[in-house]
Image (cartoon, rainbow, N blue to C red; front, side):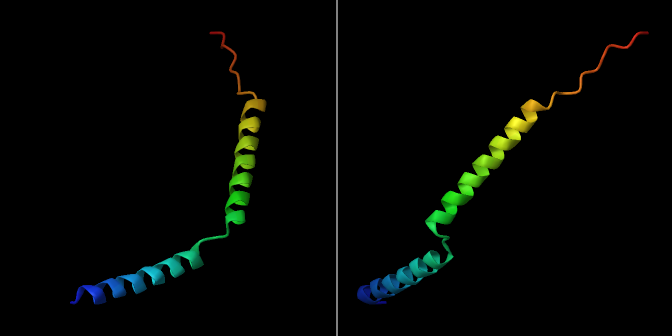
Length: 62
């Protein structure tokens, strides 16, 4: 295969892959929102675990 043809085919394929990736990529704002809500959920889980005291077992009299 002639080098120029190989380079042209590579260029077309590269452009096609870039278009496909851009179509699958979610909007940047959506990613920020998802990350923000994930951090809020994580923080709420941390506070719930600390506020609920662990069950304390009293020593048994034998």
